[in-house]
Amino acid sequence: MNWRSISVVYRKELIDSLRDRRTIISMIVIPVLVMPLLSIGMGGAAVKLATKAAKEIPEVMVLGGEDSPKLMVALKKSDALKIVPPRADFTNQIADKVVRAAVKIPAGFDRAVERGERTAVPIYYYEGEMKSQMGAERLEQFFRTLRDTTVRERLQARSLPADLIRPFDFSRQNVAPPQKVSGNLIGALIPYFVILLCLTGAMYPAMDLAAGEKERGTIETLLCSPVARSDLVLGKFLLVFTASIATAVFSLCSMGATFAFAKSFLISGAAKQSAILSLSISAKSLFAFFVMMLPLAVLFSAAQFAIALFAKSFREAQSYLGPLMMVVILPAVGGLMPGVELNAGLALIPVLNTSLVSKEIFTGTFHWGYLALIFSSSCVYAALALAAAVAMFKRESVLFRA
Image 1 (cartoon, rainbow, N blue to C red):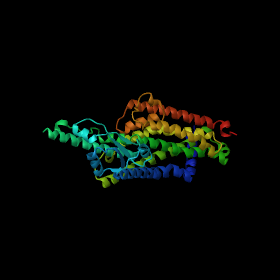
Image 2 (image 1 turned 90 degrees about the vertical axis):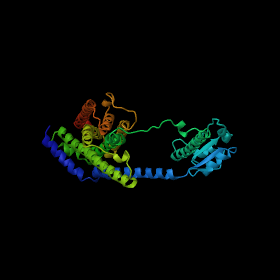
Image 3 (image 1 turned 60 degrees about the vertical axis):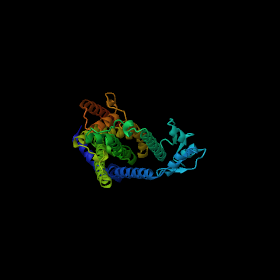
Image 4 (image 1 turned 120 degrees about the vertical axis):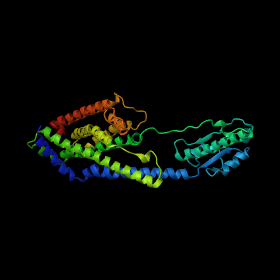
């Protein structure tokens, strides 16, 4: 291994890559501009739609109630509901989003309430549809208020205090520090995005330095140079690794700026404190996360370079590396799933282990035993991938596959 030869190959490939517009786009433009724009745009659109839906008065059907005029008058006077004429196919109307919800008034509802008899009021809605759920919630709130009012009237009629049915109050108080709250909110999202960007940032350089060399017909000239093949592949690998790490660094900086902008925007717009407004990530957590990402970036870079060596053209390399995205996404999503906790078994699964431990790191929790196990196992996987890339680059059947 000649480090001088490796550095020469690395510098040559770095200069060529920086002249390539597609490399700059995948390594800098996408993490710095596209991801924040998507995050802010999608988040703003979601907030806008939710706010608009909350202000909208839902249209609901009232089924029955002809013998309960008191209830019907109260329903029609409600400013939170818009009553529409009932129809026999009300379930289809809800499923087709013509109306948001429906309520069925049992026969003799007013008389049952006056006599103190227990009765049930079913509410029909479209589960999973936001506006339908809001309509059902408005109906539930109406009947909850009506129930409380009825109870108070009964107590007053018997000269009993209203607090008789409310013997005590309770409240929830957060005891977790802001860093843990922030870590739970964003600790799974940041590793997910950074892992994907590390993969995609290394994808184009890996294809260009392997299959691209074959397609351009420069692989033969390169092999004729007085440089060992192991030094050639290590120099090329370092360029792919640099692209992966640069993408991760740019994405972290961009996400930090995005969170800072969103925080100041929310404070100026809403002027209130919440868990979202107190987002904070310590420098220690960021450094630990970056260290844990290093072997994973090596693994992605070496694996993609090795796979791209099999391809005869750039297009063929894309078809080979495309499925790798799904292989990485599935374990990366594991860090987003509730109830998935880090243990010794999961600490040995690549990508998933980094995603889970990063979530713990951002909450300020450092399990040093798991950190050592995950870092060492990731280094082993990365070394195996790099060794495979070196071995394949030395095989004539791979480099000159017909």
